Image 1 (spheres, rainbow, N blue to C red):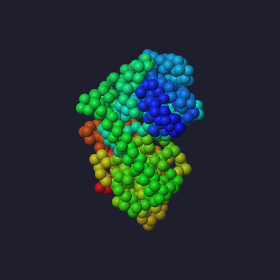
Image 2: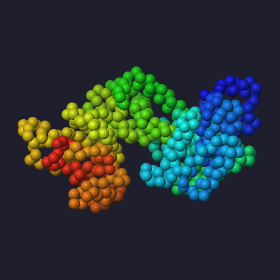
Image 3: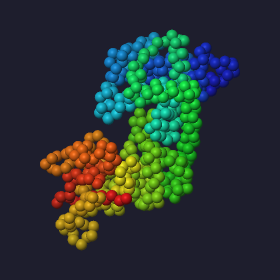
Image 4: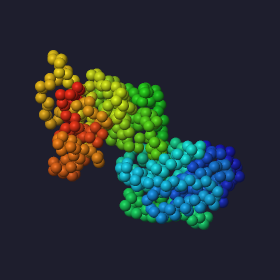
Length: 512
């Protein structure tokens, strides 16, 4: 936290502490948002580009006032060859001239992107933040400073708006989140360039910033300039709106936290909320309650990159609406959410978080010591996500395959024919090993057609079945990791076929 006595001192003198207007502007922004405190150690991400070089020099100018210790981190992404080598060398030279420690990391971002199924842009972001946080921990530093400016913020808000977002996305970037500060959010890109020119400070140009193939580049190079022609302050106005939205969101977070403290109950990785009380809350606040409850549960399971990006960044409004629909559903109706989380009805309560016992088998527990399902857990109802051609529920029922106990109506006679109804299927429950999910297809999905043919990719199956390309992503799958048990409405996998050795049957029925 910045020292208020510094600010009072300069106000009494009727002047700012620096000669350059940008330095004073950023200094005021730091004080206003309490981004720095006296004597703190800051890890600064420096790419060698104009924005991060400007941030480095500004913090260097603030060293005396805030008694800062600065460590620079530069990440070579392994993408741009000689130009990336040049950026790393230039960054090291700058730091040497300022007598600032500089750590250079060389990473295979393309390889990581391919391995994780990410774009190189997203993979680079994850790698950078992991390294920044690693250095912060190893060096015992207090904060990480990154060089996002106001135009970046406007671009981010537009990008979130186009993709679909809630208050978090519309609020854009925050000046401080967790241990990350953004001192340049008050500045436009042109101000940073003008400052560097005034100071005769050189920087490197990243040629990938000019490639229109990157979506964010198109926003920066094509969309924002058009908006600036309509109104030269378009970017500033977008940022002002984002700030207002962020303030509303922060207020809602406080209200949600108070409501949960008053009405909710925490129970070993779960947050339990009373359904009757939720019905009385405005839906907008209910959405925030769900986010807050899930964020609390998931806090310890997220990587630093996820924490920087915000709580549960893969959780969309569609997921929140599916959670909200559970208020009108019966006991055990459930929705699977990103990051291994669930929401389900338990009699008079709505439960959010990690599932135990029955739920471990459905949410990715790999331990063979996982608790077995009990009869009381069934029937288990799973709402089909929106966007798929089928709308409704899958009902899961356990049936025991016991050959010797005639007369027990829960047992299935071995001679009884396995149902051949299109929307009721039987599976050997004990063969389920990974994460059972209800979803659309993903890369790597496969299904076993016949033992003689081995496995076939879901894509190849759909091609063979002459399913139109435009319809393939709307087909509902029941999957065990990448192994698809059931392409609903089409066929089931031979890999989960009920045999004489089956002890427990999982019966799954589609219901509208």
